[in-house]
Image (tube, rainbow, N blue to C red; front, top):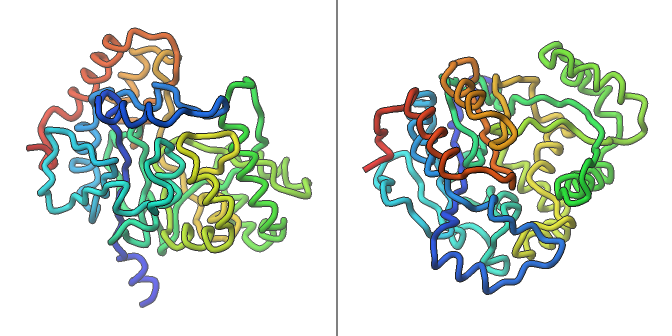
Length: 336
């Protein structure tokens, strides 16, 4: 009976969005000067005008979702139907503590997700560059009330001194090693050495002898979370989380939402799972490759990452829209 109850718990989706071309938002952003080590790259904010296809994908491929929590600083796409019964339009002011506002950091937006009013215990977090491109089921994300994820160990490495992410990942690992020892690998060995991971399971075998955790593989797709995990990490590490959220822009001194994912691994609150998805980068991967990934039906989720490469933005945007139109040509109920 308990298992059945957990199985039937609602699942919500959460997605943040910003219109980086909005003049009022730009003026507000310019009031706050980013520190030299802060990440305020324009690629973090520019609008590819494909958000409507995210909503179309949810309606077509995940009709079972209970609520979509759509987070903005107050901006609203002119085409969005705010009256849709499954849409919860959330502003930063409604869930992020006042002392952290305004914010231009994705970390602040992500680390406070558990404060969203009405958010279900089981939810899936999407960046606005991760799209559903094929049918998904609740069991792709949760089984027996636990997130489905790949707990694959890795070693944090850096190939560019200007790259923010390795610094943030190291900060995450510092917190993890302060709270968890290697006994969890023995306790939950079936979860860490699962054939579901394929070849990636070798990383867990090879990194097993280390006395501490050196990192985890990140797959840049939609991530299932338990709301209670966020609350627990905030109880355990309020200082580092508050420091991160106090910065207006992303910084090398931050932690990020991956910390919550790793915490779920080490506390045993996950089941092995592998969502069929792919991570691609505009400017690095060809337009043809990106288009094929979207339309092929091979993947359930596709991340179309925007990094600060020199690209023909308007041309790449047209290519992206054309690809999504091929699989999602019809308006969804989320559109006026």
